Length: 320
Ligand SMILES: *[C@@H]1O[C@H](CO)[C@@H](O)[C@H](O)[C@H]1NC(C)=O
Ligand SMILES: *[C@@H]1O[C@H](CO)[C@@H](O)[C@H](O)[C@H]1NC(C)=O
Ligand SMILES: *[C@@H]1O[C@H](CO)[C@@H](O)[C@H](O)[C@H]1NC(C)=O
Ligand SMILES: *[C@@H]1O[C@H](CO)[C@@H](O)[C@H](O)[C@H]1NC(C)=O
Ligand SMILES: *[C@@H]1O[C@H](CO)[C@@H](O)[C@H](O)[C@H]1NC(C)=O
Ligand SMILES: *[C@@H]1O[C@H](CO)[C@@H](O)[C@H](O)[C@H]1NC(C)=O
Ligand SMILES: *[C@@H]1O[C@H](CO)[C@@H](O)[C@H](O)[C@H]1NC(C)=O
Ligand SMILES: *[C@@H]1O[C@H](CO)[C@@H](O)[C@H](O)[C@H]1NC(C)=O
Ligand SMILES: *[C@@H]1O[C@H](CO)[C@@H](O)[C@H](O)[C@H]1NC(C)=O
Ligand SMILES: *[C@@H]1O[C@H](CO)[C@@H](O)[C@H](O)[C@H]1NC(C)=O
Ligand SMILES: *[C@@H]1O[C@H](CO)[C@@H](O)[C@H](O)[C@H]1NC(C)=O
Image (tube, rainbow, N blue to C red):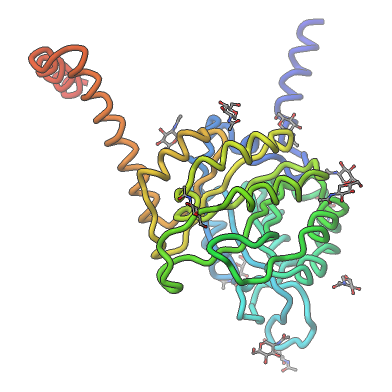
């Protein structure tokens, strides 16, 4: 009897993500990240076959971000969903080939960034066809609201995006955010997401019950960190998380960003930023905890004792 239940339990555990359509990323990668979402690794703009092949060969990559637009492949004139970033509208990689490769591979999650509602609508047939074989995390991304700083890019229609996602792939994670205007090219080096923008998102997602991650731009997200707890708590029924992203060259207050991550919690924030910023985050987090340790130690122990303690620590490190 108990053996029977044991077997059932083990079987159940293995089934927890295997075979599940579009499982949650935290669950899918749990044996590697142990609940720390910042440990998830990313690759960007996998929009051609060469980069796709490199990505599939790299075991260290967990999540694969790629852009979907309508366009053509090779010399064909048929307009289909392809992997490309605007203004490009040709590629050697179609969404169909991209999905087939990821399904064969099985081990990585995907984040599909739809630049227009037409690109999303044009992709639904493929997503439906492959739905039951996508047994890895699937994030559907679009900027559905206008954001900071007075962003002028037209967002993807939120009502249509949410309703089509619900009908096509209700298991998927919605990665939905705001358009932004920031960075060296725009000569904007400060700004923040306003309460009004946060409230509009809370209202917009009120009828959806899919899991949600909000992509937020590092430099702007760190501009006012008080708004994030409210957003995440108000939409906690959707297991809401943040995904911090950054463009190359954005000005980012690293200390504030670390504070944001710590306040929101490592279990509620994905970090998908360029290598340089990622290293700064790792470096500052370490030096912050070392200086906190030294400060607390000196308060409680006094400097003489501290010197002895440090000797002791050093000796132990050397002998270990
Ligand atoms: C999460 O992972 C990051 C990156 O490895 C690390 O700096 C941080 O201390 C971890 N946090 C927790 C709470 O485990
Ligand atoms: C990518 O890999 C596929 C299958 O392994 C191969 O047919 C194709 O030539 C490769 N393409 C590039 C650009 O590396
Ligand atoms: C692709 O972009 C080029 C240049 O902007 C344009 O001339 C062409 O019509 C576009 N093709 C499609 C299929 O949209
Ligand atoms: C299209 O390209 C393929 C090879 O990429 C070639 O075999 C074919 O003849 C081309 N067709 C036209 C109509 O140019
Ligand atoms: C959505 O796609 C379908 C075919 O997949 C097409 O018939 C329809 O016109 C598209 N609608 C919009 C608004 O693009
Ligand atoms: C999904 O996977 C099954 C089993 O490997 C296969 O038989 C089926 O053809 C696949 N579906 C599609 C749309 O490729
Ligand atoms: C949510 O659903 C209610 C009832 O159907 C509707 O009145 C409301 O407009 C919807 N809200 C959004 C943001 O779609
Ligand atoms: C899909 O939409 C329906 C109708 O608004 C809603 O009841 C349902 O909870 C939604 N499902 C998901 C997974 O969002
Ligand atoms: C956020 O930006 C607005 C202007 O858009 C500004 O009034 C406000 O002071 C900023 N908040 C913080 C905390 O910097
Ligand atoms: C959000 O929830 C967390 C824990 O669930 C709590 O510590 C925090 O105070 C809440 N923040 C707000 C603004 O409600
Ligand atoms: C949130 O996570 C819990 C625990 O993993 C799960 O049971 C629930 O279905 C999830 N809800 C959503 C909306 O993803």
